[in-house]
Length: 202
Ligand code: GLN
Image (cartoon, rainbow, N blue to C red; front, side, top):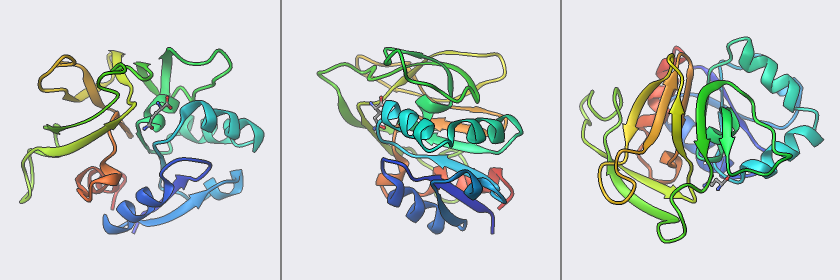
């Protein structure tokens, strides 16, 4: 089974480890650069992107991780993880760094105060429309970003179906990099993690 690391500096690490294990991967935590060796993929969890960015710097992990991504290490980022993978971030702190692995512009905390956290049923291309368990997935958004601009290589996989944020892009893929604004790791629906594990050859 593919070896998938979960960046374990902050955020909902345990939920991703459990989801990956259930999806058939061999999941391990990553806190040091050496732990990137031999991985088939890496997950950047939900949490606080500015804190994770700072800790990546403090632990000398920022450059090794960025280099691994540049060399093609497949990645999946949920929420804060999506922000870290982006090439451009709106509404972040001036000192926050990002890994530039996904050609998208994201806006942090984009859904505003009234709808800071919400759930909705979501269709995700290639994930909720195939297999025996097809059908929309419950998507949990917690102070989530949305994607405001995508590069030509980026596939849009999901948009918010209705409400004030209707049409906003909340799941994308660019080759072997996948990202969602929401948190499939907290719902027990393993389809996004299974999709990622299959993407990387599991
Ligand atoms: N608002 C957080 C950030 O900017 C992301 C929230 C989350 O991951 N649930 O990093």
